[in-house]
Length: 186
Image (tube, rainbow, N blue to C red):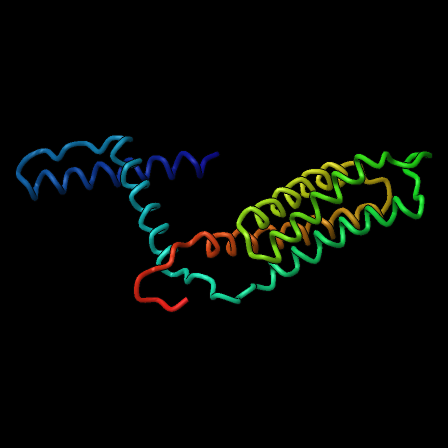
């Protein structure tokens, strides 16, 4: 707590010294910087960083498919196929077989996401990100209720894998939606 107040006092002394220096240099009192001025400066810095990041991105090539999108397409297809196959072989959940409608909807959704990712469609990658975000939330909650080391390790593994893939897909999505820039080969 003592460090916090000493930093605060140090900043106040620095501001006072700076304003005194400005008075001496200008011969008049400098206007006090407001919170709005500081906020506007912060937003301007953020916009400049965003513009620099956008300028550094290059659009995807005609037949270019980044590895994270390929992994996402394969994962979505495997989830849809695994769900459907488990229903066909008769796997029971909590003592009874799930309804065909629920299996068909989930598997159809996963196959659609896999197709969208495979074709490098923005909506497909966005759909996969939604599935990954849902998995992160579900396994985050399950992590808090893990009753064994195995359950804990599974939850951590899923969270680590889904989080990494989610982050990599964010970068790919920025490149997918980029407009073609003049003077660049695509």
